[in-house]
Amino acid sequence: LSTDTYVAVDLGATSGRVIVGRVSGRSVTTDTVARFPNEPLSWPDGLHWNLPAIYQNVLDGVRRAVRDAGDVRGVGIDSWGVDYGLVGADGRLIGLPYHYRDARTRGLADELDEAALYRRTGVPNQEINTLTQLVAERRAGALDPSARLVFIADLLAYLLTGQLGAERTLASTSQLFDPAGHWSEETIDAHGLPRRLFPETRRAGDVIGELRAGLVDDLGLRAALPVRAVAAHDTASAVAAVPAAGDDVAYISCGTWALAGVELDRPIRSEASRAAGFTNELGAAGSVRYQKNLTALWILSECLRTWSRDGRARDLPALVRAAADVPGFTGIVDPDAPELARPGDMPGKIARFCERTGQPVPATEAETTRCVIDSLALAFAHYVGQAAHLSGSRVDVVHLVGGGANNTLLCQLTADATGLPVVAGPVEATALGNLLVQALGAGTADELVAVRAMSAASSRTARYEPRGSPAVETARRRFEALLAPAS
Ligand code: LFR
Image 1: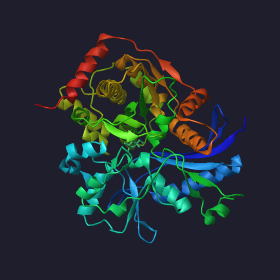
Image 2: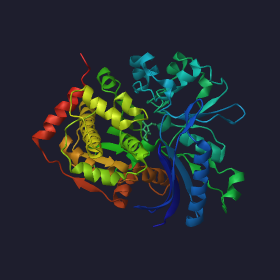
Image 3: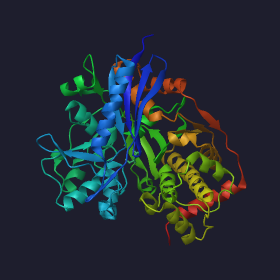
Image 4: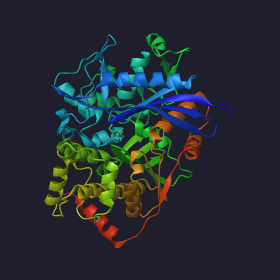
């Protein structure tokens, strides 16, 4: 069997990495050649992404990848969703892309007609949505009418190749796209946005273009290097690499965010689905990722950031070990609470949430960590249950992929709370999905089911069996009560 080499660039909201993958017909071996932090810039006009730093780190990583790997058949780029840069009529980038946590959208999502938007796009109102951000910019008079919108992974591809486009899995995170497969022109028009803002869409597997001439030398390349469209939304890449053998599975892609749901053939745009907050985003091969987006490990990284202000760095694995030794299911929070999606004093916000809802307030760092992990496990159980119920899907096993798969306490508690076995891993599902979808497009792999099998053959997973207990049942009921609308 021949082996082909691909490079995955995976851009997450807190860090990026460049990974070399050697793909044979049956499996893939990976080698991480670069890892870099992605730190937002608090600029005078708001919170932005440091795009020049990201670009530089991507180039350095690709240079190292090409130097180590030699003959590379393609580079694929994936990123978090919703955010974008604006490219002017002259082809130049206008300003720095905003961060989805920037405050300019505060409260704005509540003003939009969610019922109509959900019918058209399958995406509920969220402050982070591309639509909310564009409405804020239009109202501020900041939207150049000749600009084109380019999502983050597509923007890096544009800087590398000069080719502009919108990959469909990313477009499906915007609340401006119909999951049937096209931009929602009614939504665009209804919000006073120019249609020309939205570039042609592209599909995972397409070749975007070759690295522009100026970079070929700079990177020391001997031959042209194609940049390939992957499922450019990081979660879509991760879901493509869920190492599941059958259909009756739910997935949880857990990193900064957690996305919990099931894959479907078609979107669900019912009122019940909207009320439960489910999004219908697209998967690598046109499937629908029917999922709930939740703030996840970011809550813990924000806690660490606050605690470390005393000058003593904290270590997450040590805190998780300490959390395993304190009593569980005391104070719990709703990870989806709006205040937990915003930066700053996270331990204080958690304490106030518990106080306000009449629960024991976590006092120590270990107790706060435990509260977050318990709450995530309960939220996962709730939304996996809802996804199955609302879509009429059967779920026998939960696959937990991404960085959260390293958190053994979270994995075990998720098994306990769902009452289902949890298969944890691969941690680098996103990069695997990126590499394997490139291989699929280039003909090294032949179908998406093969991608799943190759991911399973190439990654280490751990299985957690549920341990039934009355304490978990009570906690589940307490979690549901937290979500019930205040009367
Ligand atoms: C995960 C992710 C989520 C999206 C959030 C913001 O990294 O892409 O799917 O809801 O980031 O874009």
